[in-house]
Length: 195
Image (tube, rainbow, N blue to C red; front, side, top):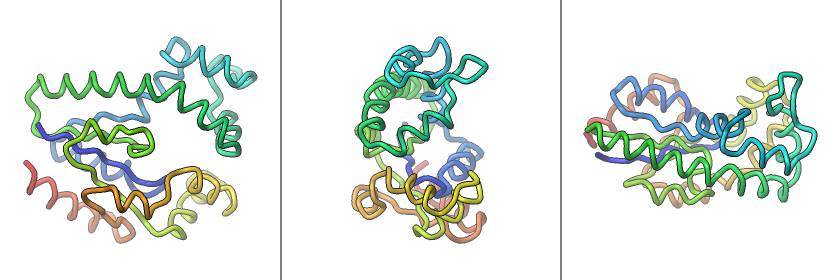
């Protein structure tokens, strides 16, 4: 089984790419979904995140992700603290899901991780694919999707590893600034070459 690390900056089209690879037959290990599960009430990181960040619960007793995001996107130390709590739980569950995929005999497992290089999770992969768009397009997409102004959108981008560094580290770079059909065609070719 080939393990592909799929990453990309915020609003780069990574989730769309991941969904298409699932359609093609890949097993997806979704680090964001694992992270969300770990920070829900009863999850592996819930209590530690609440203890570290104080008043972050919503009326439903769950972590208010918008409130927590406001804290960690504005403060590098807070972001590092959150990552030090959540990333070990995500790494452990990702390993377990990859091994389950291997045991079930699938051809390709996609490890979908926004912070693939930042967390060192590329070590779990045979190859890394980066989905990217130019910064201006990222800002436009974030502002449109999340209802943020350009400065808040730029702050979210700046909280991640610079695109130039990701491009240096990735085995394959996929520009998704064209149409969805163009991006899907690039992914289909990569899938066919590797399965």
